[in-house]
Image 1 (cartoon, rainbow, N blue to C red):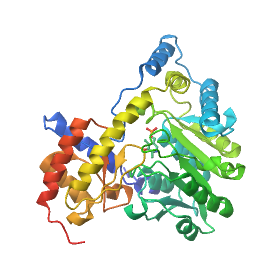
Image 2: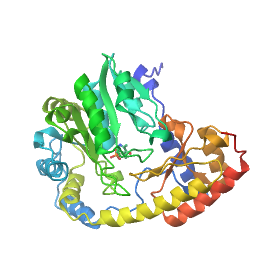
Image 3: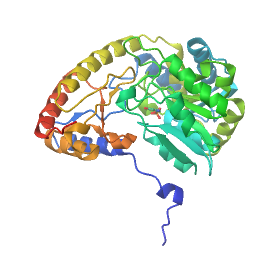
Image 4: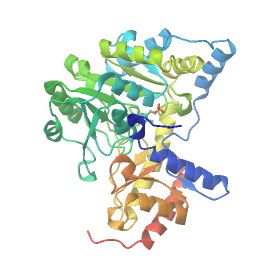
Amino acid sequence: MNYRISQRAAALSPSLTLAIDAKAKAMKAEGQDVVGFGAGEPDFDTPQHIKDACAKALAAGFTKYTPSSGIPELRQAIADKFKKENGLNYKPSQIIVSCGGKHSCYNVIIATCQEGDEVIIPAPYWLSYPEMVKLAGATPVILETTDQTEFKVTPEQLRAAITPRTRLLVLNSPSNPTGSVYTPNEVKAIGDVCVEKGVLIMSDEIYEHLLYDGAVHRGVATFSQAHCDHTIVVHGFAKAWSMTGWRLGFLAAPEPIAKAIDAIQSHSTSNPNSFAQKGAVAALTGPQDHLQTWLAEYAKRRSFAHQKLNSIPGISCVNSKGAFYLFPNISKLGLQSTDFCARLLEQEKVAAVPGIAFGADDYIRISYATSLANIEKGLDRLERFARTLKSQPA
Ligand SMILES: *Cc1c(COP(=O)(O)O)cnc(C)c1O
């Protein structure tokens, strides 16, 4: 039998973050004392009232197919969220509930991009974006940024990268993996270029609520009707409500794009889990006070980790303003990020994700979605490891 794999599938790289996570978990299962900085998910439990709403729906037999783009009650609650928190006027028909924010991103790209199209992705990027673009048959165009500019692209850099083939810009603020947050003015300036050039924006705002030091999030769609008409907002329940395993994301799009995504979803996944959607309604309409508690905890860990990382010879780290990641620069320690992380895991049993996975080999990603005690232990080990490497002259 010839198991020929399609060109599209064969072109994919498997997720390096999931691979590291699997290796660390296997070491843990063997009884080794591994400190995990690899997680891309909150270490807090889903708030009880959300679980209760889901359990209640399940017990009541809410177990059948729903409309493929989500139950009307949830789409309305999402439209209300956009109105109340972002000042955006979406009809429920413009809202699509998907099987995770990742699925929302995939749907956007597959619905808007095709062979011959270019998609601009600022690096460091969330590692799934370029692979999704390749799956759509389009070409990722990577825009490099560094810690010198807090990993943000400038309007000039964007303008220079736009060609007649440019279809979409991927904007992710607050960012995974860097935690950097564009200011409202910076977002507007990026949006202005896209509006002028007729480029769509996929704005991944899943970390919208995770902000520190007074940082402000403002979505690109909020600056004018034209900005909104060029934007698809992607969001989800995974991060701010700690619902990673529930597989629920959502998006808001101009009507024709929402319609196309509805059709795609109706022929691929159909609806996201029915009773999980009832939990999501409770997430949006219920109390939000869990968030203040989580943010206070994240902020403490972030301050500690940021300070500790910068105290390690050869490592420098700009402070993040959002999400739950730091992205220290390890280039002075003379190892590529993959070797660095492999040896760190071998020698010190600390799991971190090599920056190369995000298109930035000079860095590693540290997730502080783990206890302060773990962070202290893990960073002490990282320091011991770094001191065994020869710091390279700048
Ligand atoms: C976590 C994450 C998502 C969505 O994750 P799901 O678990 O699929 O909801 C989307 N974008 C970024 C940048 C993320 O970090």
